[in-house]
Image (tube, rainbow, N blue to C red):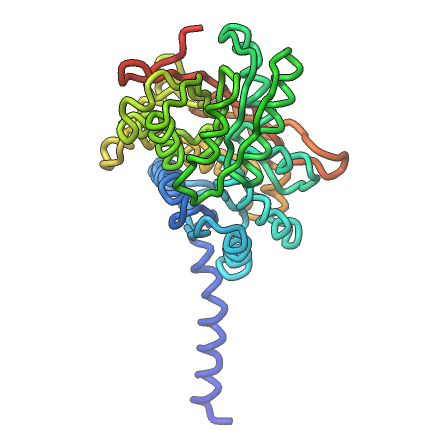
Length: 384
């Protein structure tokens, strides 16, 4: 073999060996969110919130002396696509930890991949109880499951004078789970549960369901859906003369966006949310809230997105804290370190309690939950 050929092979070998070292110059975090499809607006808000956190962390020196790199993928609001995205982030992009996947059905579809490859994921939005009770030790959630949201709402029910409630929910794990958990809570408090109507995620005409609901004697309508569909529901309720107290659940309502899009049709509606950007002084960390909102505004994003974007911000900060505690960008070390994380998020303390079957527990944090009212086109805490 010629000297030149030997030298060429040696150079190639050195080049191949150098490639992983170049990739290791940053610490990758996979971001699996809906950027197209019915949930695209919400997914984009979460991603933009995540970018603010990443930039803030990197400006302070990063994590373990390296900058973090967000590897962002679109799950297209589709469970099958969400699972495929997770596999790509793990196998092709070699991300040691992920954040996702917004909707409960999307997150549930991803979870088998987490166990298959033993890679942890921070769940920033999904509320289905099954996410943390089904036995997946690679799941750590900072958003409230619907049962926890219902628990927080329980003391408010008597103050609202609720006697009977109907439900209109999106026909997926998120909506059906909310109807089950809130229904159980209401029944335990002596409130009768009436109709439970469902609607597909992409549905635009809910007149058939609303006609049934209009004819009941329920005083309250509990709705679980994304903001665009909520807007349609409110407009159709107004057109059909459906006059019932409305309470929305799931924390994906964007009350500001509802005001802008639904106008008078949203008047006097009530919304359970987990962040108070309208009153930073009342949040658990006013200084952090003010920084986040100022940065959000500086980047030209609409204020309406703050009620969802903070999830991405808190999610990436939580992941960075776990990586720092792990001392390495290695999946099993990060999984273990999540249990040691303690920080103040924009909606309360972030620390993980065990949830699910023994030996396969998921981590669940307990954020704050607030009841917001739209009155005279303005948004504020409901006066109970």
